[in-house]
Amino acid sequence: MPKKIENVGCPYCGVCCDDLVVTVSDDGKKILEVENACAIGNQIFHHATGSERVKLPRLRQPDGTYKDISYDEAVDYAAKVLYNAKKPLIYGFGSTNCEGMAAAAKVAEKAGAVLDNCASICHGSSFLAIFDNGYPSCTLGETKNRADVIVYWGANPAHAHPRHMSRYSIFPRGFFTGKGHKGRKIIVVDPRHTDTAQVADIYLQVQQGHDYELFDAFRAVVRGHEIPEVVAGIKREQILEVAEIMKKARFGTIFYGMGLCHSDGRNHNVDIAISLTRDLNDYAKWTIMAMRGHYNITGPGAVWSWQYGFPYCLDLTKKDIAHMNPGETSSIDLAMRDEVDAFVNIGTDAGAHFPIEAVKHLRKHPWITIDPNICMASEISDLHIPVGIVGVEVPGIVYRMDNVPIQYRKVIDPPEGVISDEELFERIHKRLCELEAEEAAKGHAKAAPEGVRVGE
Ligand code: SF4
Image (cartoon, rainbow, N blue to C red; front, side, top):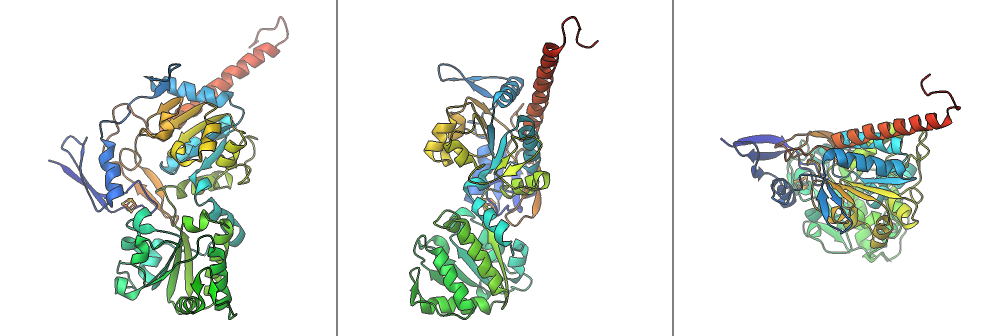
């Protein structure tokens, strides 16, 4: 009899839907059906048992082809690369569990590496703004149960977080929001008339790269000052109308995305969005939330902040003290300045998503990819180590976009012999400790005075 497994978490986007129902075959090896997931989430599960899964580590040969090797050999290779590098970079982590992140941090610390996650090219600018200006946020449950005004600013959840609107922000009927969609005002700010804009009550077509001015205008109006007739392509009347709706809200949430983090101003766009949220709290209850991308990209921020005090761009090369300075210790900057001499790509695809110049610099040095699937990063690697898929084959803790931790379940076994990220990093750590001990022993032997045998 096929078995239905309930309350399954989706390992794709930061909405972290945990209401999936997955039907697996009698032998527990095949996924037959996935209920409640969007098209993207559905695909993640069905892809897991596809015939193209890699089941053994693959080492690149001099002729460019790959040769299957054992996990022990792969662990030894990875540990030696990290041990011999002066400044290795271990980057990614959007798509793994917190247990894997903690184990990787042990490796980074032992290797004296730079440890960074995808925030570096995503919501890292949010972190910079939050360091400066705080984070008046809430949980998604509070938005669902209380919010009567929702703003999506520079975010397109209809495509990027497909169930965000139906689970938390627009359509659900919550405790104080029994009318669902009808009881909420939806405002979308975006240069493009996106599919999210289609469901908005008010759409503001801001000029691309002029979000800062528009926030500035809203702040001026909320504080009772005059503004010009048109700001960032938006007419004064419309700004006054939206500001009035915001001031009269019972509970509002601004959800923002790459439209702020990747456009002119970056962290300053987020900084002023936070300032507007604070200003609005003089009149109504307002909150703000970053639309975090991967299902557990909030995880490394939580895990490493607890371990080292910093969420990303962690320079552990001094070994006894962590240092963080995005711009100096961020992955792209390090790559472009050719400052790292080994690269580990884990739970991401830097081959596809880094600028090509950064990839070219990184590719001059040993490149190891740790990923369940074949991707661009795996295809340009010296070594590709396959691992189990978190949320499908490996259980673990993940952090939703609102910093709420969720325990993900495992629904099927990984392909025979394939291990988890956590186990892999634990094994690399053990091998690094052995290499260190071997070198120390050699060093000791070398330093011993003539005629004295080591150990005497
Ligand atoms: S919205 Fe995101 S978390 Fe939910 S099912 Fe779709 S991809 Fe998965």
